[in-house]
Length: 217
Length: 227
Image (tube, rainbow over all chains, first blue to last red; front, top):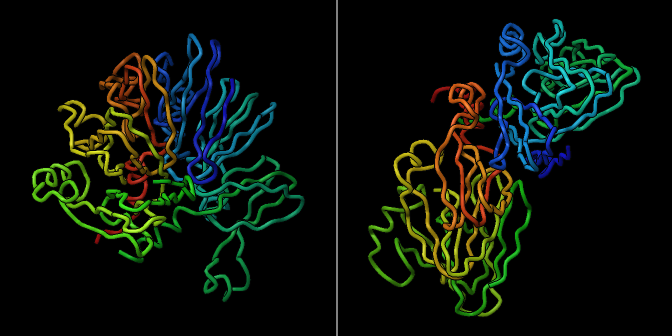
């Protein structure tokens, strides 16, 4: 299955070329357009109970759509935010995604829900995180551009900017500086990530946009 | 007229170069910058012809402004830079005698050899297509500029093609579409979030936008404080 991410980073969308036997699973409402011969099957996102948990805690839809085609076809997948999409090829390893970041995956990838801990919650990232594992490609999306970094010891990310990370990475909440800097310097709380492992960050923060807009209403 | 589209796809503008006596009709507020050898005339219909009240009203229903701005060059080599208010993309479409049906707010500009009018696509499509009640119809032989929220991509339809509601920018009138359910079952289509989709058939060019403004609005709306 050939998949190309176009119009990065501002309005990224994925053009998927489906051949007979290919399958891609996408978040509800991710389809922008497709050939008329594409078959779409809607199912619970990993069983009824798991789907409900993922809806409540993982910011994901209750249902996912499975796309396949009996002959060559194309499919365009997108997200609601203006922003970037990243594809990761999983080879049996695991990746944690922030709630709402999942876009699509190949059938060999499973989507689960994991406890992220209080540090993640205080850091503005949610009590739970999505756990993707298996073999195949997974696509996740962000508001703004996505950039990644290999962490060897400790690194600091502002709250609301962490999109995905490997399971070897630990999260801890900390102050950006001293008490004064932390509360008047506009940084407040930050997430301290400890490696080794890779982290993915987004260049913009949606609550930053809504706060700015609210101050102008 | 020559054109160049800059800053695609996030904040696109069209830079037009007009020769003496060439003219272009733009959406109100589209002008960003221009040379001094251009004159602007505001009407509610075609350039030079008075009246056009009905056309102006119809355009309002199509999500466009009541008025239009006509820019005419009085000297050679005049530049005009136009763009939409929102973030997004611009594409150029060349009409060669046929018509292009444009989603309400996606018409940006067209040259003087193109006539624009509002068109009604029927009740079902008006209610379920996720677009406006009226569409803009551009007819003639000349240039049309379209804008969108999101990147614009082109699909050459030969047979059938499906577009999710809210993602149509424009299509040649050799194509028709009807509203159908996205999957095999109606319940599944709605649970899967795709619900109804637009199924095109025929042969012609179709422009889609990668992003869906109402979907982004639904994320933003609940986070804004009441006024």
